[in-house]
Length: 165
Image: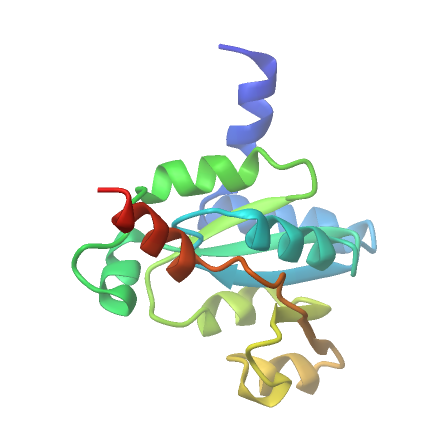
């Protein structure tokens, strides 16, 4: 197997691997940025958002909804790409530090575990509406939003693909 493929795969962390990774990152005094999503149909808007999120700290942790979680949130026809594929694609990006899958409908438990310095979502949310806002601010962290790239959304991409059939 390729060395670069190994590097990508090592960014996809299980619960115990995440614990070890967090201890090392905190020991090195790294500022952790956390975001989450389904990232089912990855597009330019996602990439722009994730790059901007990564620039807010030293490390970017992405909480990724599992397939079952996506089905509950988006409907029985989703996800289009399985969780392993979505995690691999996100991990292949140079600015991504770690990917962690979560089964729940919200990343609240994962946020408690990661204890990010910065929690970030798109500007379609108000900071106080973001799941984990109270937790992150309680330990002195920041909750921020990032402007979305106009003209790019999963709904638009899926609509265009459906029109092509």
